[in-house]
Length: 171
Image (tube, rainbow, N blue to C red):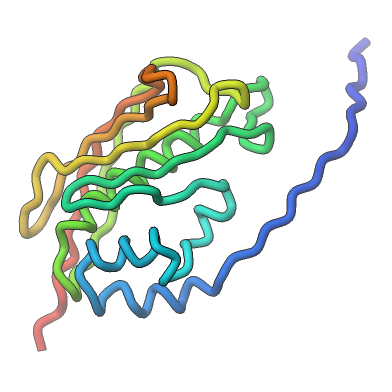
């Protein structure tokens, strides 16, 4: 016989801004300026950051940091933070590091990402930093690497990505 698990229900409420507002601005300014305006609250956060409750904290040319405090609502069925949360953070940090190198009118998309987990994450882990850093920034592709690091200095994951650069259409 399987025991039925009974626990107190938890709720979480959050809100976000219409993503079309910021999407219209992204191609009008260099990527570095766009991301700095998000960090500084001049442009709304993308909905994914509100959904998972993480934030953009540092933006420099070729380098970006997102931070998160792992919480219970990030858990998977086995009682730890879902790996997709770490992957989302790393994709955000690495691809935004690419974005910092792009001129106005240029877009990008992730072509490939590889992530290696080093240790598990739980709500007891404490604040994590997802650091993204450019390795190569070319006209058609860009490569970045990332590290997910705890406030204790421990490495929790490392990753690499390749992004495809979307050049503006010539008129």
